[in-house]
Amino acid sequence: MSLFSFEDMKSIKRETLGNLVPLELFRSVRLIGMYQGLPMKGKNTTLTVGREIGKSMSISSIDDLLQIFEDLKIGIPKIVRQTKEEMHLVIEDCFCEGLPVAEGNMVCDLEGAILEGALSTIYEGKISIREIKCNVNGDENCEYMIKFS
Image (tube, one colour):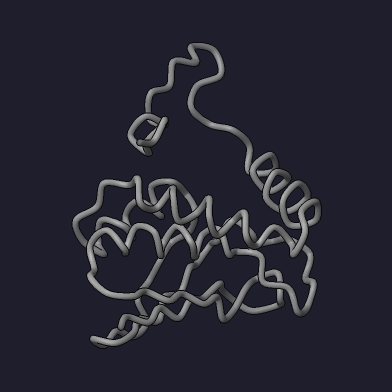
């Protein structure tokens, strides 16, 4: 049994500061705390955390998931190509947009794991997600290749 769900996270009673925190705080937790501070750039942690977040989201379709990504300001997702076996997804205006370029680094594994966890609740079979482009790597957008089997 889970202690918290995604729906629980919407229960906000901060009368003075409201429901927003600065992007630099989120970036600091993700990229300084986890990416730099944990072994293997925090990959095991972000994959586990992201999958659990995704699984706790109430979605019934890929459109629901894409809307949540935009509503949460993770980025603006667009399906570039989709077949029965795979989906190529671009995230425009990703949280990492504007960070210094560090070639060879893909930092949006948490977001990919969120996609994987959420998709696992509506698709049967195995889902494999790989980040293939990232703003931090110097790419124009962050992109994921999602395979269904």
